[in-house]
Length: 216
Image 1 (cartoon, helix red, strand yellow):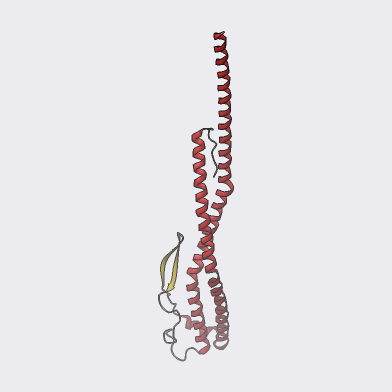
Image 2 (cartoon, rainbow, N blue to C red; image 1 turned 90 degrees about the horizontal axis):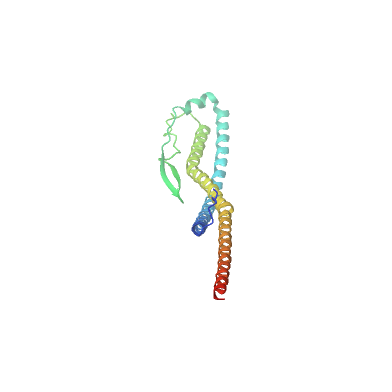
């Protein structure tokens, strides 16, 4: 964004001053938006860090349980337990924070199931396989619940970067260019006025001299 150089006129000076006022108001609004985005990110940062730690811990326990079940039953015995696949339904609700669109994602039903709900016949699996399945269902629940928060944090981060660039452009480029243009136009007008006053005084001296000659 650049400021075009206009002829040094009073109208150009008025337009430049009005534009400078609009730039200052726009920068103020953007600074407030940036502060609000930073506050919102700080508000979400701690819960996001906590749930990431829970995800890492749950994933570690899940893989430990899976390795235990794999050691006890073998891959051939565990493979039939994973069939058929399961469809996980989620509810998506739109969300807007400072005009930034995101969404909340929540499971439509409970992710963790009982042994009977998994459709596994008694005796086909032992406690180790059931524990591994339960832990990975808990991991899935955490991932689904964290998805909307992570999406919102990413959108807020992108919006914060964009807003910061806009503030920087207005404060470091547009505002100084307008200030330079206003000063340049004002100096040109002042010089023009001084020249006009000098020319007018010169004309008055000539007229007064001519009047004096005529009277003599």
